Amino acid sequence: NAGVTQTPKFRILKIGQSMTLQCAQDMNHNYMYWYRQDPGMGLKLIYYSVGAGITDKGEVPNGYNVSRSTTEDFPLRLELAAPSQTSVYFCASSLRTGPSGGANVLTFGAGSRLTVL
Amino acid sequence: GENVEQHPSTLSVQEGDSAVIKCTYSDSASNYFPWYKQELGKRPQLIIDIRSNVGEKKDQRIAVTLNKTAKHFSLHITETQPEDSAVYFCAASKGGSYIPTFGRGTSLIVHP
View 1 (tube, rainbow over the protein chains, first blue to last red):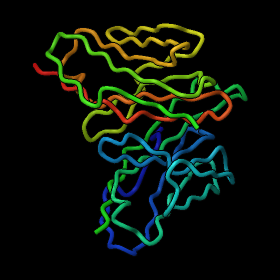
View 2 (view 1 turned 90 degrees about the vertical axis):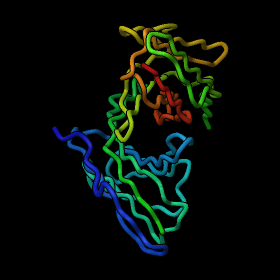
View 3 (view 1 turned 180 degrees about the horizontal axis):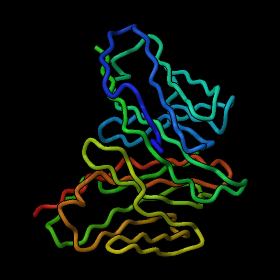
C-alpha cells in the first residue's frame, strides 16, 4: 500500500493563479482531510470529507474548494492564489468504523509546499 | 468548537533528561487524545494515544496522562535521545464529530 499520496511536493504560484493539489489514498479510508501548516500555528483544518460525495468546511476554508467524487481521491483547489496561502499543505485520511467514533488515527501524506509570490 | 492549547512552544533538554508537554482542551465531550510526532521535513505520525476511560498509558519511554476533571493531558518522554528531537502535536476529538483539533505544536530539542 502506498498510503496517502500527495502531488506536487513543491509549487510556486503567482498571485491570482489557480491550481489543484492532488491527494489519493489506497487504504479504503472513509474520512479524508486537508490541513495547512504554518510555522508556530500547528495544523489548521481546511476541509474534510466523511465519504464520497460529502464535504464540509473546517476552520480555515476561505480561498479553497474541494470535491470527493471517489473514496480514493480528495483534491484541494486554490482559486486566485494569494500570498496568505503560502504554506505547507497536508492531506490525511482515517477509517471510522462505527457511530461511536473511537480512535481516529490519521495517516498523513508527505506534504505539499506552496509558495505564492 | 473545541480549543486545544499546548505548552511550551519550545522545549530544550539535555540527552537523558525527561521532557513533559502539556495540553488543555475546552470541550468536556472530547474522548480521544492522540499525540503526533513530526520530524523535520517529514509528515506527522501517531506515537501514542489515550481514551477518556483511561488515566495513563505507557509505551516504552513515552507515556501520556489524562485528567478529565481538569481537562488536560500530558506527554512524558523519559531518557530523551537526540532522535526524539521533533515537533510534537497534541489533539482532541469526540465520538460525535470524530474530527481532531490540534494544538500548535511543541518543538523539542534534545542536545547530545
